[in-house]
Amino acid sequence: MSLPLDTPQGIANTLGYLQHHLHELTERQNVSESNINSTLAALTTQLQQLTQLVANPLSPAVPNTPPPPVPSPLVSPPPAPLVRQTRPKLSCPLDFNGECHNGRTFLNSSSLYICLAPEQFHDKQERILWALTFFKGGHAAKWSENVFRQEVDTGVFSIQTWGDFEQQFWLHFFPANVEADAINALEGTSYHQGNQMVNDYLDSFQALVSDAGYTDPRTLVVKFRRGLRLGIQNQIATMPYRRPADTDPDALKGAKGNLAVTSK
Image (tube, rainbow, N blue to C red):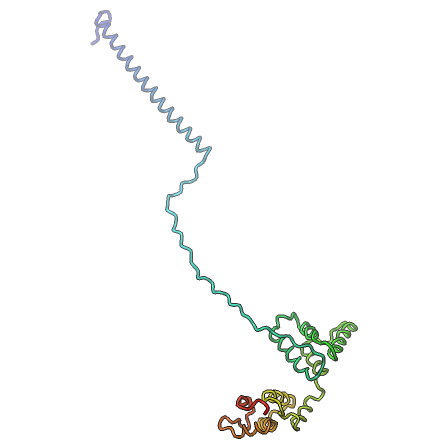
């Protein structure tokens, strides 16, 4: 129960109440100002953070996972050293002057070179032109000159293939009657060994047989033995073993190493 205000005690109580209430109001005001300041500071901090995010957007967060293991590189075995394939050095044909006795040798050596080194020629005609470069002197040079002169006159090179070249070569640079001449030689005695080595005699005999077209084995053996020197014929007839058969001309080639190969 409140005291009358006109009494000193009433006035004192009233004054105390008012002071207490004023103190409470002051504290409440201080607390409110502190809360407002804290709230303003928090808002200011958030605003600054939002401003930074707008100016510098962050990349999406990547989970911090360890990188996959890097496989070790495969080690290949060292390459095998290249082995360069070499071929024996080829010899060009000798110069040809048109003499018939050298015709076969020139044609054979030319054909062999072309067979072993075909990559050196771009086409068939280049093979023919290459062969004609060896036609030097005599009938061969004149014939080659006529071939090129004909090309100038007609605009066409008359020899188109290597087969055409061989045919023309046979026609102009081989004996006219090769087969007949070989048969006559084998039916006579001009082919006999004489003072030749056995190897030389065998080579010339085989050339004559090829030109003559003889194929009967017994005929070949008989004519070959008949052409040998008498002393070598006797050696063959009295051989204790490995005596060549009368029907095997190839056996004579194998037996030549056991024969006397020098003139006595």
